[in-house]
Image (cartoon, rainbow, N blue to C red; front, side):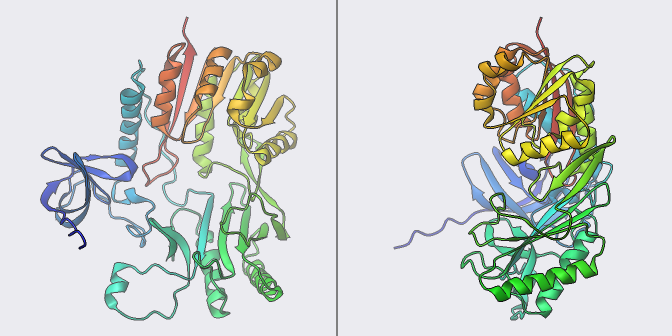
Length: 473
């Protein structure tokens, strides 16, 4: 006999009191902490509990009794369904206030180290259309909203191009207008969608691995250049002809595209790092610019997705580094060498290390393009490359700049940094929680001298943070 599912409670007239992790808000009911999406501090709501543990629960708001005086009206028609930009209901001034608090809480509670006064967060000048890259997925399983399901009608068009629904890997929400990237992105995506509808192109099925149209990537840049990459599964020659007809249409409709590319992907995933990118029209790259430096961006290149805030972030890192022109700098997790090349004019020599070999090749190209001859780049796992032998060979760095992935730095890397004993460490992080953990390990030899949060992603809970550490006397 099946066990009866436990009925979860409805909590009535609950005041939302704070902002929590992952973009959710927080309420307290007696000793129970409740996490709730799409509400803001000051809202009074009825909460339907969806999941309950001993001391916390997850719930959704099913009725609003009072709206918070700081609540904002979401501007996107897809808000609440798409899963992105969850903080649209919170004014931007409030968003950055809570991001500042998030940095302070993480460094204090996790790091447990002595801290200076944290500098005011640098907000993003652009809070809409600020991204330079978006990827859209084609699917023959369009997500139906609650309203569409309630209508109980059969929809003729179940193909969609848009974003994956959280928790439903094979379902895609059809996007009409996204506010993250310049509107040319919406125009290109919708034109491709309409052409595919009109000419009966097959959209990909993630479960059966059938269908032609798979993925669309659009990159814009501060130089005005525009890259479009179409990813397709091609089984028959006729499908290759269909893809090229579509690309011809795109090239004719959008003459401003400077790099029109395609990838034939017959694998079971959408990653393209191991696939050949083919040029249909224009160049195989676009450029970004920063203080007269030009950075070549290919289809596989990593570049910070908010160009304007990336510039502010790198200026903070360079300022914290305190370079005079005589320093040997190690740039760890250098990516395509953006920071390394950006600080090279103020350093004697910069050595960049990165896991991805293709990124290191981009870094070398970017140095060559800009006539920079005082950089060296190495590819490999950081904990394997950055060793005591490496430091003995290349010299002890005066400054280390590190910008690790969300997981933070490996213990071996931290131990090697402690062995290298640079005078200053500039730690750039996209995850203040793991940054705080690493800072506590570095605390044995280093003192935190400055902390500067930077907001790269408005309307989300994500925040970057830059910390300056100096060697203890």
